[in-house]
Image 1: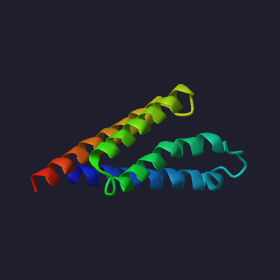
Image 2: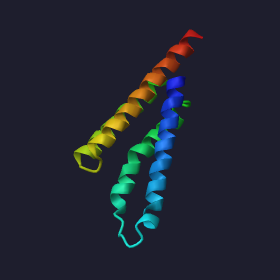
Image 3: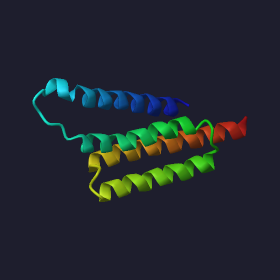
Amino acid sequence: MKTWRIVSLVTYSVSLTLVAFILTTPLRYPDFIIAWQPMVVSLTPLLVIVGLLALRKRWPHHRFSAALIAAALLFIALTALRYMAWPLLAVAFLALLGMFVASRVLLNAESQA
């Protein structure tokens, strides 16, 4: 359960930081024309991970694991198409791995109870 909280808190803090960065860009660079596409695409993994965090409580482990694999394949496709950078892929994989481990621990805890 601790791992789940850590993954959730890190994801929410990174999402708030990224949204704040995107929203304050016009204030920091007033005469700069902003390229919105890379910023919005960088939100895709974050939105998927936040959505998966909400779905874990409603789905069983096997369905959640399939969703994690689908998300990983989506992230790999975004990286292959050059919409997502390698460091962002690495961070997304770490979050997916943390969610898988936490989901597995929750499954084991539920089966022992």
